Every structure is written in C-alpha cells, then in structure tokens.
Length: 60
Image 1 (spheres, rainbow, N blue to C red):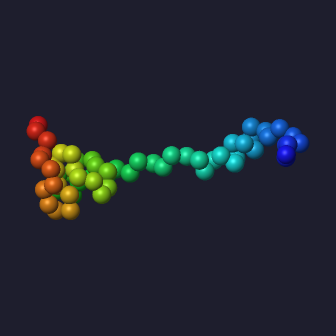
Image 2: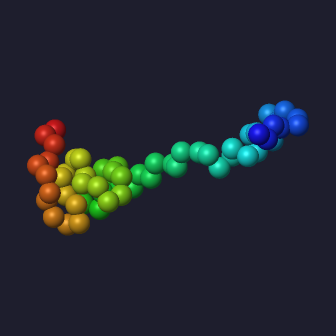
Image 3: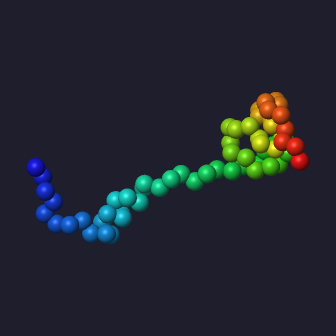
C-alpha cells in the first residue's frame, strides 16, 4: 500500500483545492418587468418566461 513520505503542507493542499469552488449565482433582469431573476427560469414577480405567462403573477 502506498504511504506518503512527507506530510502535504497547507500551501500545497490549498493550491491543489483552488478549483473546488461553488459556481457564482448568475442574476439578470427580467426583460418584461426588470426584476432580478435567474436565467432560464420563470420570473417570480410577473410570471413570464420566453414572452409567455407561465404562472400567476405574485400579488403586491
């Protein structure tokens, strides 16, 4: 069984793990009402997606 000869330093370990980061959440404006929403999802404020009403709009 392989056994490491030396302990991996914090610097080496952190350098190796730099790519293990959660992706940033993208937010964009709804083209219809301007509310912030995630791309490719129904707008929570107006209920529209791709120019069509998909769900009932949220009451104010």
